[in-house]
Image (cartoon, rainbow over all chains, first blue to last red; front, side):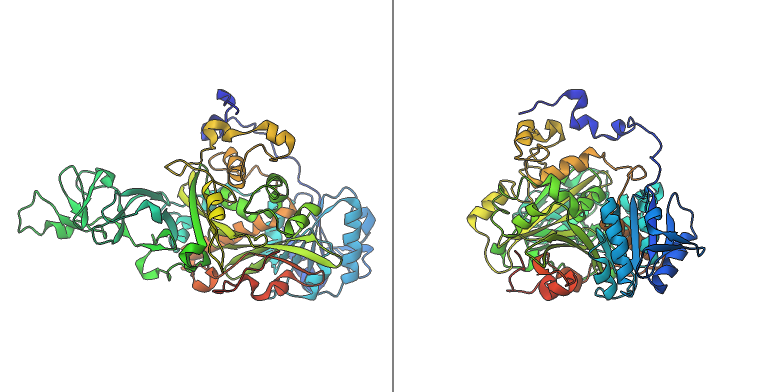
Length: 159
Length: 427
């Protein structure tokens, strides 16, 4: 059995007083995050989120087959280039209409080790084609989700 | 990351706080039945939601939960004499009934009506399923009595324990929502704990260390589904319900009893964890109850004041050799204390402005959002909270294997609904 080591023991270390001695350094830079909407309703939510101030988050729409991303200002970019140095990608869908694009982008993220999350914008419905399209590729899914969820998720991960 | 003012909002549960007001719309567990075992037994101090109260059981078996302190000179009525239908302050003999009403003030003339004007704050206290429940809110808004399945099954089918946790309620609750830590922190327990071992589902847990998650919004709170690979074309799902504000269940394993927790704020730096096990269709066995009493499963071995024997004063009895051998992942024994040791190490109230959440923390992010919205909606518009209605409480956790193309919410169907006499859905 271990004997507590006084000054370093849990009883002392877990106090409010000791919390004051935690090293106070600026948080590391935000993780590079990409947010992609896959249908009209989803793109609307993505555009709404994009209007806010973010760290390194960038926002796009995508349609089948998904090898290109379109920025909120309408520029077309190569998927491969936009995923360079990315830490996480949030997929947003309200329908399953761009399932191929979801698969392309999801697979590209898997290959690159990019963390993926998915938001299914189907208010009041837990089952949907959008869910089935995102499921294989999103490490975590919010079902159903709304614009608030997207913003809160991005704020929480300091996108 | 959470802004400081939101962290304050979520973690402060005193009487005048938004989250405190939200909690005051729910029946909360405040004592185990064993703590008031007989008429005229000693009173028990109850601190909950930052209020100092006293529970007692009078000569007629009525239960009272009243302000701890005598209206006369502020003496703690914990020293009181529980006799002849009331609790008498030993200082000057003022006596109160279970409603907090003064019924005797010996220094007053016999014809005095002074008593009628002396009443301590009191709250309803009811015993249900081996637990005493209190409601600290507006009497006009009192919800129906608790209908959780663990308190409504026959007595022999349920067991509840409680333990002190020395940190804010929210960081304890978040451990109950965060399924992703189970793969690591509790990995040593599946094969050794008699309340878990032997279930077929355990092999899926061990075979897939990188589960996917789906967080489903439902009326009473959230359903958090953890998805692992099973046989070809199938997934193994473990579904954890969270019901606002502070109830979670753990997905079951085989025919073992089901279990879960209430995370009850004592004050802003301490909480009680009420941990329950029950089986929907059979009595708990002697072995199972013995294991629970010994602190296995989701329970802990405690002292007479319900403080875990492994606690921060003895470094949680950490065993580095057991850690090295792989018997425990953190070196701390038992699921309850594995969680508590880490959550207490975060400090009494963790500074969430410093955290670095990742996308797989979406369940926690969503739960915080729902709590914040519920508290603010109640404060600003009086919006009725959810989670305090019987339909919200008739919920079960689920463990199930489903075809890969089936949504878990569709696949579990009625399995998440508590129905008397119907076995749990478990693997």
